[in-house]
Image (cartoon, rainbow, N blue to C red):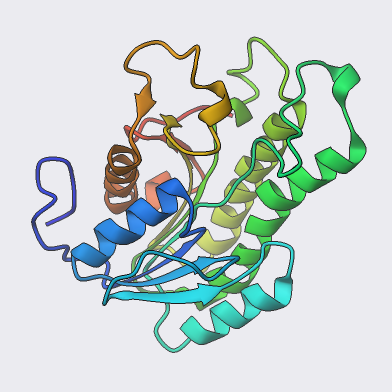
Length: 250
């Protein structure tokens, strides 16, 4: 049985092994706990190495801007690759307090490069080293948390230039990976995921004006995303899916 809101106490039949890059964040940590509580062996990575503690969680260190650390993490998983991989990293407001731009006049090249490095290039390096470990004749899911605001067709109000651009680029990369892997790995699903607005540090500065009911708890968000990932198949590969499993058009 798959994990889900009405069946979370049931044992997972798949996957047996998982990897979460960004396991110290709100969504990543919640997904690690849910998987581990269901007996899944989870390789849980963060920049600090601090991740949820559990008998089924194996911590590792990585840095999105240090390819060698990502390559080392993949090497350590190579003998028993994860059947489900989630990239749960991302930044909206930088560590120095620089937030998303409200107009083009606020565009700063250094801030934009930093956002792109974390939201786009980092996940690309993870894909570079993890996707070659995937089996050609068996099921796998490789997913990255993206955002609805990365959809060009859905953009009605503009702004948030670096964040929107980084997520649009990530969505394009997911499509590229799906096409390339689909030529030889026909049982896999490579996804971009929109989790909704979740009560995490990323959304904290922007929660005050949210309508009632729009903010999702970390656990509920994790349950939603796990349901989407565990239900996904090859026909979903390359898509941006929301937390209900509906496709968001580019």
